[in-house]
Image (cartoon, rainbow, N blue to C red; front, side, top):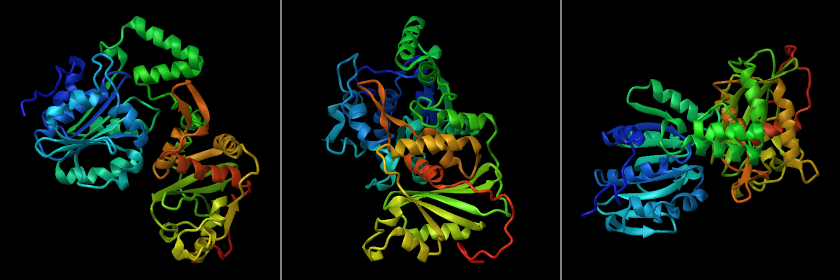
Length: 445
């Protein structure tokens, strides 16, 4: 082939060599948390190019959402060289094909490289990958790793998780795990650890962020973006302050099931999309979230089975307004999902009506904020739901540098929507006394 890799004279800087050496020497699991503009994608692209010539296989570069891939990587230009980043890493001399439609590059020797999104990880087709870069993993759907990790275990492939911090979420958990697990690589590099920014430049950036977003948010964003702080909420997070307070007050902990009180469920329903269920008990003035379940691509019979297999005695099941009108499929004879659910034994069902105003979603978000102060969460069983609440955020307009009034639809949406079903639909009752009747609704004994 006659192409030197890394190409175009690119070399890892001294502060990038630790990660590069780990991967080049056969490391399989790397977690790199680094400040903005450190060059995370650059080092990942160049390493993947070299790896593709050492072992034939498919290599993926995964961003949080597929619709980000083209602008962020495929068409991105290195301002220092004027070249596209993918052309720097994968020069034309080492390619056999380039498909812009699906952002795929075929490589000399039989390997391939492709851009993908964590938002459709279970719909990707073709031969499984042997190397995956999870770019901005803090914003990615963590289920993508749960789905793909067995593939890499089987074929001996590698995974590199590269990201800036975004609150105390799944990236922080993975970093903590990597730090104590033999064979894993873990590294955090702040702007003080690298030569990318001078102190003068950092102060200019801080002043600009504070001027744009205000003292509190601007400083939190600066610490997050450039000093890898996990303490601040995700920018635009609707429930950041409330969830941070819940952690501070110790309300995210072990919350056991009280056998003397019924369990109420709160749902967000999709057709082929994710479905979520929150399991709650109301003890005195406390709302205790004792469990959470989420899945996708499954019919209601699956969720009925999940509920039946849990040891709970159920009260009411709260479902969003569209459960009464949308069809599951042609095979359900146009029955509403409420009717299907009741036939499967999920009852009684309360349909939460959609408010008749244009700000229904924002009013629901405010309802969640008001409700969170009395909520306790089981840290283990509700981990995915907690992450959804902490990560649920407004869309950000990159050009105007403002938060839009519409929520971003990503992997956090379903868990947050299910919780909104609770905040909007539930009317507080005093259910702290034990029941002493035979349950005639819900699951029969």
